[in-house]
Amino acid sequence: MNAPTRHPATPASLSALDAENKRVIMFGGKGGVGKTTSSSATALHYALAGKKTLIISSDLTPSLSDIFETPIGPSETPVPGVDNLFALEIGIDEVMRRWKEKFGPQIYAAASVVVDMPYDEIIDYVAMAPGIQEEFMLDFILEHIRGGRYDMVVWDTAPAGDTLRLLSLPGRFLKHLRTAPRFYFKAQDILGVSRTQFLDLIGSWTTLSEEIARFFVDPANVEFIVVTIPEALGVYQSRRVIEDLKAHGLTVRRAVVNSVITDPDSAFLRQRSAMQQPYLAMLFNDLGADSVILMPLLPYEVKGIARLREVERILFRTE
Image 1 (cartoon, rainbow, N blue to C red):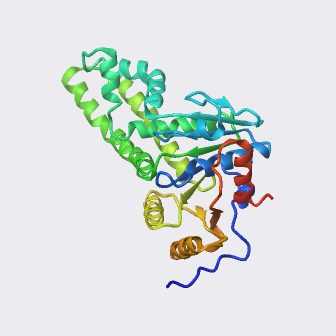
Image 2 (tube, rainbow, N blue to C red):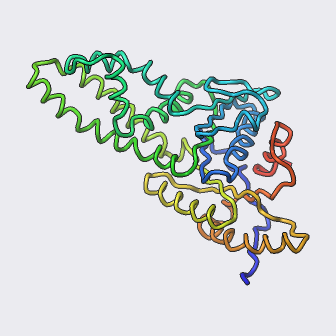
């Protein structure tokens, strides 16, 4: 039998984030481990502290509406009963619809001098470029920071694989932009068309892509928190996510572990607790005990502001 894991005398918390002035806090991990609960409680924390806070869910099956018990969609919606807290659920389809509104006319003006195709076909074709959807999802997030509309954005990301794809493919898009002028120069030679509009478009997107890349890997701006549960599938995937994010320039410094048995007062719970200990030890070893926030297994489901407030107190040790 594995020896019991020695939990820190002072439980770790997210309270250190209060002094770090992050602009974006991202919660990621496999599906079903409590990302939405952790991100919603964190957004509530900052709203209660007086910061104008937006929580965004990009999960394919978002549940902000369920956890806040109010309808939330692709528009910024005030959360009833909480000043300074706004929420929205956004998917790739909605991001691309807004992207087409923002860039469609410019794309068509540049591309229509080379190809004779209907407006929608040209825009849809360009939208298939590698990484472009992910690029403008990140641009969508960053837009809510740039203008100072919000003090804090909390991002409830999609399950781990989709999040890694989101953060890695913009690099491919940037690579595409850097090589694209060769094609357009050739088009000018063959067709005799002006290349100015192409270069203006590519130049603006290259600048945008580089700005996004710098922002999301800068620890002064962004904190990525892994959420997991103390079981094999959750912890092993979390460790892979941490390594993959590191390869893309993002260092994970904190993890929230949900459903931890802290009071094993029955044979069943003692057995479950013993099962959890080696996985907690792995995370303590990887990140340090001060960086692993333990959320106890709760006897109730977390729905509504009152329950989220209880989770917030545990995450930030504000009780």
